[in-house]
Image 1: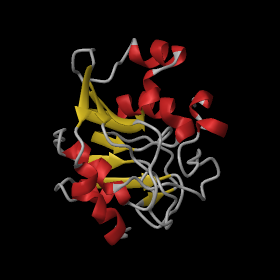
Image 2: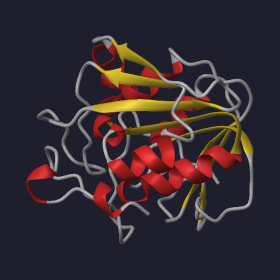
Image 3: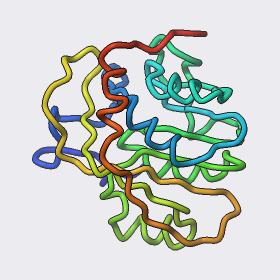
Image 4: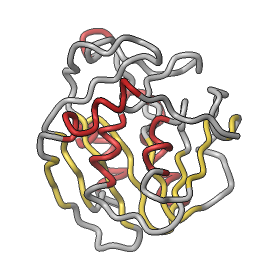
Length: 209
């Protein structure tokens, strides 16, 4: 766990997104943010979304014809509940997720062991900072690519009216298993929110068990 990754006080983005320590509150990932990744990174094989929430991200991944395994530590009506990603004994070709704030470093460490092809996490751009992460992650296993969002992502509590704009910069961190240990910085152009944002308001993920 990375205690420094929790957001508090003035460092919280718009709508005061906070670490989901108790489980009842969560902030689904806007569909357009997942589309931005999948239109720029090719994933071959099955995908595991281990922090699936209500399925917002998993449903977008499935729309790209991927076989998706969806799980979460908490039961939010979608996927397999009661699965702790940090201790689960399974591996899969690809992992794509937006991890809990307080477990980001743990997710990186575990994800690199459980993915056999690619591992992608949606994180604050500020995750690149920090002496501890530099020593434990970036020196040893730097991401292959970091896709920086040119437009801000706003995370809304599930069911909340979507208005306003976020103030925090985010990026997709992608590790390609077996790739040369160096990083490439890329930028996602403006336009994904306009192209796919309406889907976040008009559709809800299809529940499955």
